[in-house]
Amino acid sequence: MSKNTCAILLMVLFCFSCKSPEARMPESVQSGSFLKKSAERNKKLNELERTHIETIIKDNPNKNYIASESGFWFHYNVQVERDTIRPQFGDIINFDYTISNFEGSEIYPKMNKTYIMDKEELFTGLREGLKLLKPSESATFIFPSQKAFGYYGDDNKIGTNVPLICNVTLNTIIKKND
Image 1 (cartoon, rainbow, N blue to C red):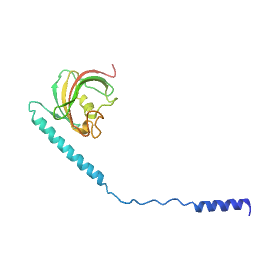
Image 2: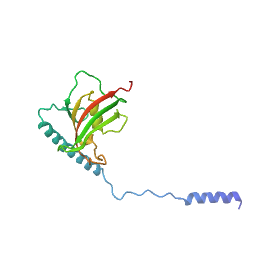
Image 3: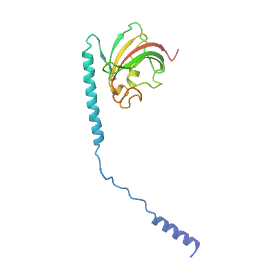
Image 4: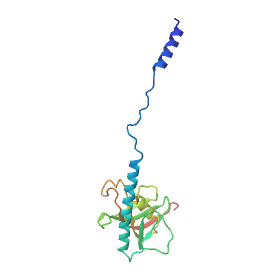
């Protein structure tokens, strides 16, 4: 046998002897039951939080609570009529805030923060709430857990699925063009 014939035979033998493993079928098939259970659990949580928020609002009839388009509620403690400037993307803002739970226990006492609007980390509700304020305005925000720190909490004092009340005062806005 010539070298070429041997080489061809070896290649043919090699190709036919290699068999790819067959795919294994799963032992059990779940039809999205985990997702259905999770969705049901979230619906119940949202309903429970909404009921609690409605109670807070009802218990404070002297406050004019406004439902935001983003899914949280707020009322102004101090409202400024003359200014029309509100934070925009990239503006540098300075604000004071406190964070409490629905029972009124303070989780984080008064803090001061300088923040570049939408360019740094800040929980969703607070970021959206700040966009509603003008300099020198103060508001109380009620955030359901999905607008606060959600499922993960803040890895410190705020646990899983905790709705929050935040008192916020917007001190200054430095426009990104200034």
